[in-house]
Image 1 (cartoon, helix red, strand yellow):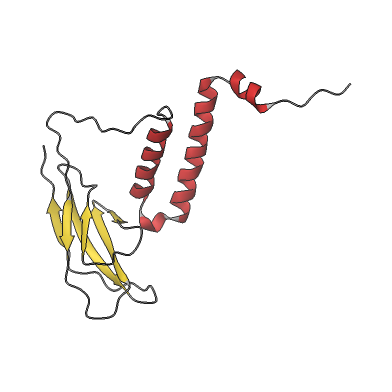
Image 2 (cartoon, rainbow, N blue to C red; image 1 turned 45 degrees about the vertical axis):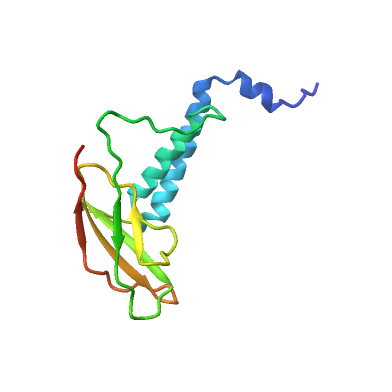
Length: 154
């Protein structure tokens, strides 16, 4: 006697919430491992920040608006950078930030102008920034002069 095929909707309803959460976490862990393995040169911090945002978004009910709850005394910080244009023909610039021993490229696409705002700066941290010009072939120049910035604590 042949059994009818199992339908997925009743199966999902019968699964406990914890099993679904564990499945999502397993997928997130696999994604993190893939990102770290293939993009280790761009920095693990970027991958972890993207993962934190992803996990935060999936834990919200659908239709919920993303809001930031202000903590008393908390201040948002940003660092505005500007530099002189390259004397050579360039297709753009990459902006790098060093924090401790980690160096991270901040921009996902080449910066067209000669300014950049790092809005991910955290209170009480000290960062070092450099820029690198990109040739028309996508080859980076040597780094610019370093700029060190200390973000005030709240």
